[in-house]
Length: 70
Image: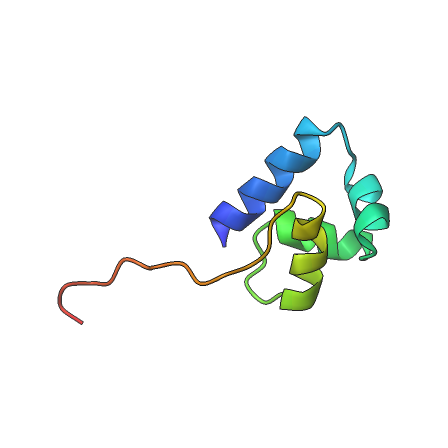
């Protein structure tokens, strides 16, 4: 989740948006934006996609590194 939170925070700042601006433009609550940027592990995917849509992105499957012993 750290990569997602860092991505959103960097994109928001690069566009000169406050967390409040981002929440308004994405149609989500300010608390949600704060939780997202702080790396909260349980977030609604539809709301994450609402935020990512502003940056031309969406959630998708990503190959994870598996432990060789698993």
